[in-house]
Length: 459
Ligand code: NDP
Image (cartoon, rainbow, N blue to C red):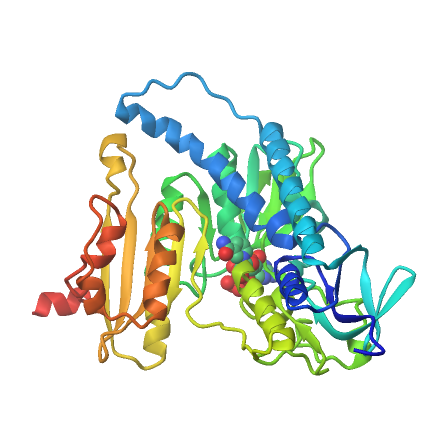
């Protein structure tokens, strides 16, 4: 180890960097980690965790209403956004502190400040420079917004977590995870919510049935979803409200315009280009299957590599780097059958291939799908439907994908993901006994192959 102060310098204290740092230290490596903002990264500080807390808050509105069908009399209710935000901030502070302690307890040197590569093995933070045998870039990403006139009046999800009050009228721009989730949060909490998406249907890349089904459900819940339109300009009016003009000729008034139009890797100012580390067109660090950059001793994991931008994937990538470098087990990042959820209302859970992806691969597919009213709503009277769908390889009968829109979709699909990764067949699903009464049992009781309407009529 001579000549090096450290075995690993990790730049970025988010999910991927922290896991890699802790695991490397546990393998006996000398590790330092630097974070310029708050330990925990996007997921803990201004992503998954605070978002999920806001989703819980938003769901209460319907819970109070639904309770009436079960004999409850719920009195007058009111909602305090500042109280919710303060409670959320306390929890985020707690979690960020835990991240720091976990690193310290693992024996990592925990630094606060912006790190920069000043030589192939040199990392500088403030006045100090370290010589590190290996470097891991785990600097994440940040929201991007298009440069339309008046974009300075819009916020991103970063600011949405710190609004001083709940806006009365919100326009959410985008059709991806973040836009769909925040439209649901604002709408649930009582803001008049319009969601604008430039394409044909929200959640591009998800299964077509899921996209249609969720769009119909969120519209029922009161979101004014407008497809095939976008913002042309935003202007601040004399009364402080925002005038939003649309590409379809329409206009909206709002108190807040939130953009969720994608994220970009944080690679600027780190000294990467100067060292010849290859970057992709959107600035993402290019890596091989071991998360190794074009400089063999420099690695990168998580959103900064723009592969699958999900926290658990970054964690696995970070763990794989630690195992490769210090655990004596060269480990590839694993991107097969990654399950994910959109915490919309109702939620989406998905794993494996969509019907469209399976067909695009030239596979013959059997489709099983069902829509039904969740049992709870037989008494609540709420008009909400759940969708479940299995995509099955017609030849091998292997289940290629499972998709769901409905309450607890994330909890249900997590378990299915294990079966699908193990190569379960439709017959394996069929011979599994359901848990009754549950929604999840539908996944093991779908017997009828779905037929396109025309074909069904002909038979
Ligand atoms: P996404 O890339 O998922 O979605 C971006 C959306 O904005 C798309 O609908 C896209 O449209 C639209 N868009 C892009 N550029 C423009 C533009 N110039 N004008 C108008 N619309 C535009 O990004 P998100 O910001 O929603 O999320 C980033 C990533 O974070 C996700 O991909 C996901 O990996 C991760 N994430 C995961 C969550 C989870 O697991 N629950 C939650 C939140 C984030 P089009 O489809 O036409 O390109």
